[in-house]
Image 1 (cartoon, rainbow, N blue to C red):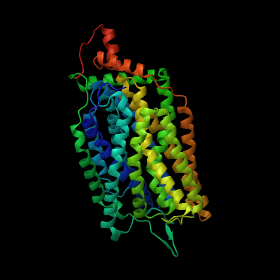
Image 2 (cartoon, rainbow, N blue to C red):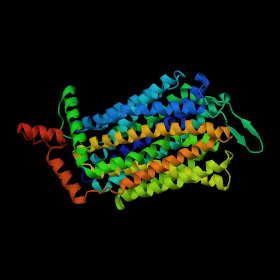
Image 3 (cartoon, rainbow, N blue to C red):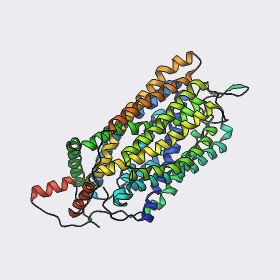
Image 4 (cartoon, one colour):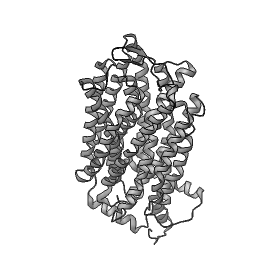
Length: 499
């Protein structure tokens, strides 16, 4: 629920540049490099098989989500207590930049995964703080549009991010293209195999340049002005104590907020489909379809252009027809895209080339549907939380939704890696290991359907109810539930007003 009456468009524009910046990390590190980098390290340095290295990454990645589950809700409670989000976004993002820029330092599974876990934890923590800023910037009627605009603008940075990756691939072309697939080949008159190879993934400039690009795009965000609560001096130990108290009440009360509880469970599945797709889509193109690194990246460009156009429309729909119906539209995109992808991989024989043919058209539909769906899912999630959460608990509920999303990510990463490990050898014995990816995509469809069914039962509060929440929150000096209960027990009343 928004706590401002009028949206400042310039402020929203500056705010949206954090989406622009963190999409650089998402595209370069999460989507393109990390999984394949671990697969290469595992095979070259440890003698692991492709499926074994994949299972190692997904298992460690799943376990690392426990850190996110443990810490992000606490961050949310502390943000609500402080009444400020922007300083958290900036300071936590610094850890993402430092750790991700060091991924080249040693080609060792433990070193690389430790750095990536720290980068990912800080990435999600900063993103939860960023999401919770929206009610302090946008009027109620503009929440969906703000989220959609920020996400759509964010996707603009995928183009320079892909350009940077192609540049690195070109600079380090004497090293060969990165490849993790031991069965990689091209069928176009001739068949030839590519060795498992680091390419530009193993070079320091790739990661430092990505961090610099992230930082450059983030600069406008520094000038965002958020509506904050009255300034208070509080010692860290008191802040931490009160935040734990507020977090306890969130866990205690969340079941009483039936619709928020249902939404969090439903999006437990839906958001995981988006996060898993974000992590593996390029791997599916490279190792399931058979596209080389540079070709996969180039084919992403038209998908990005379409996403930039469509994602703001998704945000607009969230305001006009409601986020619940919009969630079903996004779910339909995934269903169509993943079904087409599973079919193309199964029957494409890893010989699909970029030309007008049924298999390439199906592959491209998968790329468009899943690519747009990834960004659209996060838009819908933001809007749903902000429509359901009382103002004093936005940070907590955003953090709590990240708990369920990360918990489900743990399960899905484990199952994705398990499916690859379980079926890879079976299909490899048939000479068709790529069919493993069809099975894994079908599993994501099952998760999606479960999430959509649960979301059907979510009921959004009326406009009158949300307006009442905002008025009460402002009258109470933007106090959290913990502070109000403490003040009530002490018989004190605060007359402070928000700034």
